[in-house]
Image 1 (cartoon, rainbow, N blue to C red):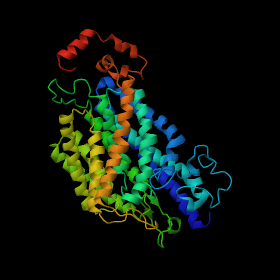
Image 2: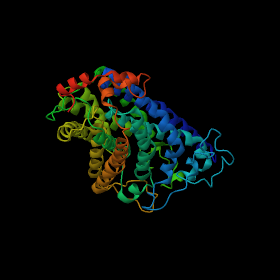
Image 3: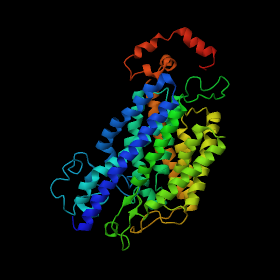
Image 4: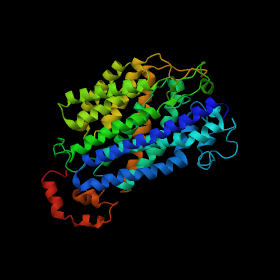
Length: 477
């Protein structure tokens, strides 16, 4: 390391990101509790194991190719340039191990990739914690999809889809729109500081792309198409799960910042920022504290009012409020964050029930609305509120500025192009192979007897008379 200050910066940054990882782990704990609480008793273990096993599957695939995609694809490729060489992210590279980068660890070059100005000493100490923080974002994206598909998807099908979003599509959108050199940032002026679109809109769009071919749960819609309310079996577990997600989001927000980065490392003006966003623009932890809590409060208040005090949607709208404001929470005034959080929560609530009635979309936990619709709306709102602000740090030769049309295009790319379309294609392929949805008998008896359990054969004991009775009651249409 060149100086004592440089050494201290790297060591502090390493510890900073290390702390965010267990905090973000609480998001996954919260999702597990939330989803199990939202399912009926006969589907508990299926839901828990489905969401648990995405952890190793996404982790392994993210190690082998997901991390590399982030550094390799900021140009598209083919939009503003080719594939970027990224020595720090290849799985067989010496920087992807525990031996601190091997020979030349104190060199300042010629490592290729994002952050090369800090040299191998930077990546040797920070590559693992950066990788882990992004990995936890991957788990979050996959868990959002998990909630929307409960009680009828095959575990194997979900795990394939989890790898698609967790280690491929979301990390492409991060390379495009969550990287200071990403083509969406430099060409469209796309700004999404805390991942309204990069995580939430894409996950919501992906969930919708899965649900359309997957179909609704048995009994969700009456023969005339009227939606039935299938209540969570344990609302207490749901609310505790959402509280844990709120807690984990503190780590999520903190991990979206880069602490104490020297101006010489990013080519910015003189001086040292206490923190920057993912776009290397200056921010502070105080901005997180103000705007996170104000957007959460706006969402909770709006959710309580619009749902008439219904607990499930009050808590869910709190999360929707955070997500709606996240795109610009590095720049908003706290009052703006509160108002945007409230607007996003109301829109998510209203759109959920309108889409359910109009298009017969069965989303048991409201994931598409809370994450997808709120994230999409939040991106568009940021385009108007932050119109004219630089989208990234000023060290670029050409710095794009935030605009409503740039944010709208970004929202469409996140929700539709990288979210809905890949999920719809892969899900239809799985459906054509008979791999997407569990058999009718299994769904009636309960998915705890499905393919991830030892007693799947017991589901065959469901008689034709049981199925006939379900049809008579209008549960099967």
